[in-house]
Amino acid sequence: MSTQDSVETERKYDADLETPLPAFVDITGVERVADPADHQLEAVYFDTDGLTLAKHRITLRRRTGGTDSGWHLKLPADRDTRVEIHAPLGQPEAVPEELAERLLVFTRGEELRPVARIHTRRTLHRLHGSEDVTLADFADDHVTAETLHPMQLERKWREWEFELVHGDKDLFESAERVLSVAGASPSGHASKLARAFGTAWPSAVPTPPKARPKGSAGDAVVAYIAAQIAEITALDSGVRQGADDAVHGMRSAARRLRSALSAYGKLFDAEAGDQLKAELKWLTKVLGKARDAEVLRDRIGELLNDQPDGVVPASAATRINAELEEAFNSGYRGMLRSLGTKRYFRLLDALEKFRDEPPTRPRAGKKARPVTAKLAAKAIKRVRRSQKAATREAGAQHDMALHQIRKDAKRLRHAAEALQDVHGKPAAKLARRAQKIQKILGEHQDSVVSRSVLLRLANDMGGPVEDSSPYGPLLAAEEQRAADSEARYEKLAKKKRLNPL
Image 1: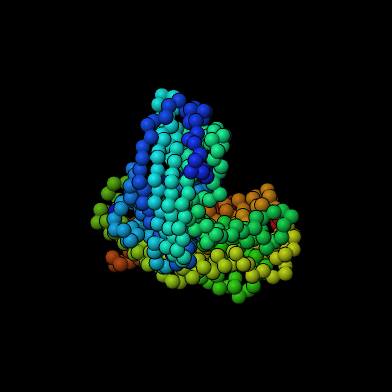
Image 2: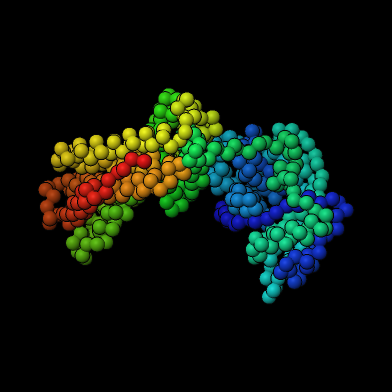
């Protein structure tokens, strides 16, 4: 089954049964109105027992009639815009798997069931501009709605929908004036489903506090945590569908969460923070198996492509590619299994509870700037200690020490990012410098991992690993990459200091 994504930009208006139709040609840019078309629309709406989708202002329905019969999943984007995903009609009460999968991050294993049935008698007026371009669709809807769960209610009303087709958002303002003259008013409900439920419509998920320079330290960190939770939520369906960079993005958000909880943990209850960090570590590991295999596959694939013809025999290249591809596929399958488990869903619940009811300590209520600057300074000292320790190591231990610097720099970068709304440019500058260290030493670590894989493959063949071996040129190239990245790091470490906020 295939789905189709589109963007819906519309506004809704309340109208009485006696309200006359507006003068469409008075809307700026409208030159012609097509003959009206009548449709009978029947829609069944689905949600969990607790109306989880409604709380996130998400709509899932199966609609028959009109020009777009099928399953419709609507996800909020901004004030007037929603992303709409279509799927074929299929079976009446069997939510298409592709749509259900997109919603797992919200439903978390709960069953989707019919919660409302809405019948709409629609008269559609298509509004055309110059060169007969369709600007917008105006729908005059007479609605009969029946809620099925958790209570049974029946309501009837009339409403208008003004949906942009090729017109821009400026058209809304002119249309609103004309519709107001006709007697309509902006709807007090975001959707037909919300109006059907009336006072039983659940409150939306609360908006977390915003970080402010003169606000509290707790609010600043919680705002950053909330942004990372939103990122995980937004990327979840892309991860499941194999979208480009979705796994990388979700793992980065999970790492940012861990970094924030580590750097600013003294603002919150220790036990709650430690539990979240442990589970986030599990999630990053789950995501990392697929992501690391993907990076390694692409990296060694690039090395192979850079070799002159005949240097690496086809048999060796085939073996390398097959193993790396299998490692990626295995990691991806394991990741998908983990993202369907109760453990993952419990982590999402725990993150949202932390966001909505942060277990703060008294220190979190103090002004953000002095408190967070002091805590960020500890993250800087951590990097400096790792840098000093690396100078005392050699060989494999030196590689491990460089990797530790990278991890500490990443933690510092995330800690600084969390404070950009509080400390402004100094925090942004600190984050950039930490990111440079992280990036350079990330390349070094990728080289270390790549060499270990190539050495294992070479040893599996038996005999010494020499330049004449199929793996010799690849190993030599990786060793050079590692040396180059370490040299760049040394130069950067001498030139750029990590200054406290």
